[in-house]
Image 1 (cartoon, helix red, strand yellow):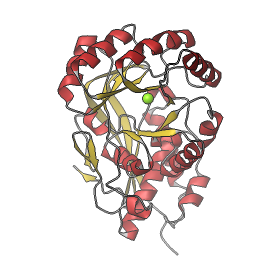
Image 2 (image 1 turned 90 degrees about the vertical axis):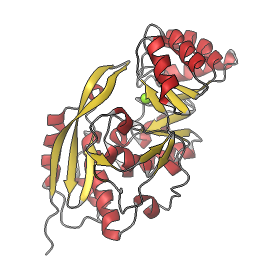
Image 3 (image 1 turned 90 degrees about the horizontal axis):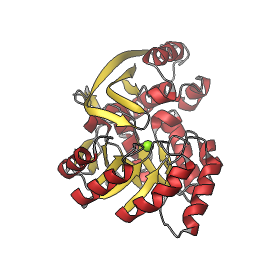
Amino acid sequence: MNEKLNLTYRPVTLDLKTTFRIAHGASDQRHNVIVYLEEGLGESAVVPYYGDTQAGIVAYLEHAASGLGDDPFLIEDILNRLPPASPAARAAVDIALHDLWGKRIGQPLYRLFGLNPQALPLTSFTIAIDEPAVMAERAAACGYPVIKIKLGSPQDEAIVAAIRQATNAKLRVDANAGWSREQAARLIPRLAEYDLEFIEQPLPAGDIEGLHWLKERLRRQKIDMPLFADESIRSAADVAAHAGAIDGLVIKLMKSGGIRAALRAIHTARALDMQIMIGCMVETSIGVTAAAHLAPLCDHADLDGPLLIRNDPFKGLRYEGGHMILPAGPGLGVEAA
Ligand code: MG
């Protein structure tokens, strides 16, 4: 008889380098939870706008720890026994199981998935909401070839104009559900003048009808601006529900509930001919490196989590400009910093 799998956890406080202001609110710190499942590492990012708390995540993990069984290779069985909510808590267990899988087999996750570690898209670097001049200065100074601009403030057009003037980088914008239908219909044709790759989450989460309406409005005005959904989409079923309403979507392990569920969402999106961006919350190198192992399946990446925090307790994914380099160690390849 094997020993029961042992899961422990450690709450961590992450200090942000600059105040992270987006349409949902501002924060200087985030409170995540690190999971240790035998020698596997996992992470749960506490995302306030999804209603998660550190205490809620810890309670989920306490519950999960009692039902893991003794065979870590039965990943599907273990995950099927876990409660669906919260996805961010579930993701920590899922990531740790995958790290453990790779470590016991002795191979990095990307190899177990049959993916090419050289085939990662560039990552964007995020500029949080501030005064237009401050955001432009940060965009010019960051040195990243792809920049993501957070919008959803009263100065959205001035922000994009200032940043466009300050840099030749590729620009994508994220409204974080900050616009009404009418605001989006008015703003997007103006923002289209500034050579943007795409617009993320223009409307409130769940307004699928609004996305159809907005796409039709833009099509009639001959505005060619791809619309991506982020907050609207967590599961593969959500992806299917958005068929025809969006051009692309953002996959995050903390939204989907881990690597397993993210893969289902990725394959569903591909079947529907959607573009895919792999993204992250404010996470340490554990969560972000886990996501990066799936990046070869995606068209775009927004995996700058560790770049935004001052005190990452781990090291894994490395950055050279916008290029990401996956660690070659088994599992996630993440170690203590
Ligand atoms: Mg987003």
